[in-house]
Image (tube, rainbow, N blue to C red; front, side):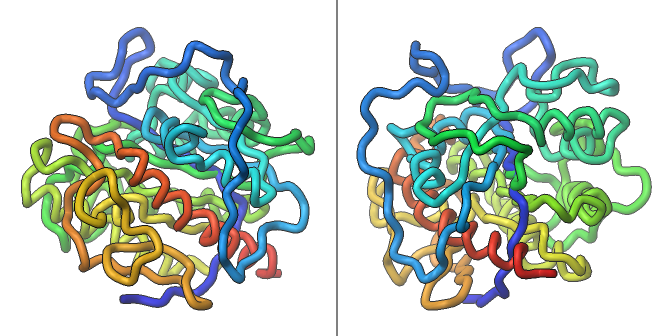
Length: 343
């Protein structure tokens, strides 16, 4: 078990589901069917979630944009993970991106919202179209998924969350590979050349951008795990090592408080007996949460593959998404206040 210092930041969330082209459905089965209603429309929602946490939400409504594809859509949804409801209850106004969203990236040649693999974070944050892309992300106030939210307070998004999807949990290489430096073949390449070293190099390349935009809080959400039948022990161990590196090592030399990590992967690698029963709030299992006045990060009480997915489908079940919601939101509050108190 590791205890980690508090971090606060503006959050942008990005989540993705594998390679796609401007005119084609992604090759990976990472899309989910959406309700036939208009995005943002809601039947009478249930009560907003509450949290027993000594980390208060922001004093005033904070705007947040979540960059994602289908796993993010399910996590946000009122009828699955309830993340949208939980964030609204904690004074966050959430907008999101999805397939087809946003400006055209000059390197890829298609709408940037189609591209959210690890190699594509280079396009979003440091590529030749990054200024245009991120200006659009900061000003986004619409919905591309189905979840309940409150009233728009106006202004730009302060928090950016970003997440890749489960195909990004199949990494080549070895767990201890060092970050790639110099010309990185993964930059702008989606899943091609996805190795532990190349993935580490991409995330290190992002830090210069984040350091130049300390008025925003950037929250990197790790890609969810694959089912055991969609990966192998070597790739699963690589995924574990890479995501642990993001939490424990990526920011070692980064001097500011505007970047944070939520290990979505880790949270989804233990349950209470089956994919439909989570271990939220229990002492055992893998967790990334704020507990007893500290950030708790436990990674050795589960497995390296998904504990909340069924054979042939790595999308997390509702039980897994709910666990992630209730572990993430108090942690986000903690990150927010660390960032706000930095200066």
